[in-house]
Length: 92
Image (cartoon, rainbow, N blue to C red):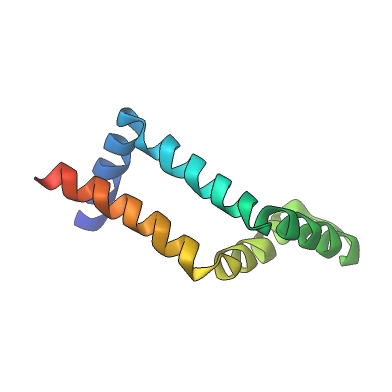
């Protein structure tokens, strides 16, 4: 439970300070730069077409795993470093 509380506290501080939006915007911009967003959209459309009955919940479940695993490691590291920097500043 302590981890959940710590996460909630950090998340709230990130949102209140505007850092959450800044990091999210950086993530979206970076994924757009490398063409990841377009590739992912095409993949999602193809998966939806190939489903016998397209249910949003089922499609979302499939795409979540694919999305998380397909983000390039360099982008994950970049965003993780931004979060670490924010947290370190909060602890100081």
